[in-house]
Image (cartoon, rainbow, N blue to C red; front, side, top):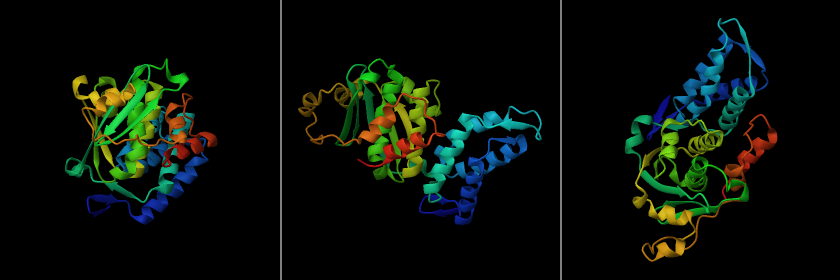
Length: 279
């Protein structure tokens, strides 16, 4: 690994080998425990550089614990194959650079406040910029936990390219969402889909992130935006941009798609990549 201006880089020859390895594993349907452990070890090396990739190792590690002996075979299930496809998709566009974890506290801080209402929609604020989304009909009855994660992912999709080599602090008054961001895990499938999307964006745009809980009284801007009460807050915060961030329809469909994300489906993969493109 080579260090350059706060970045750590995977050498080009190793990146090429990683891409070839992933292409080989894309066509596998079964392997021995020894082969799987060796594969995981090489992905862990890459994940030491690109931290968000760690979330896409968990299911492979769990699968490797199934066979008792190294020579025993195990079938690659849909979940493990999905994670392999994630790695192959990301490695195909990755330049091999990642942020130094030790420099996380020294990186420029980006503070983003987010909130979601159960009835109208969600919102996020970054400096004077803001975004909002009204819930589609299919999301009105969705639990609040996935709703709270939506503005976080939309913020990353919309502003992530401006956060390159920055540390982003997401602030929210919802403790469940903050816990999911901190632990990189949640039992709710829709939240996990959104978390995985967020990690892909963070890896692609080269930023790190964390989350902290704040009282509702300190989150009034995002709260009012999530209730579509923007006019009422302009009197107390006139610096707010006149118009919200433009969100592409592909991004809305990506975060609001309630189907089980299936990376083994070419149509799903195409939808995912379309959602990452700027509006």
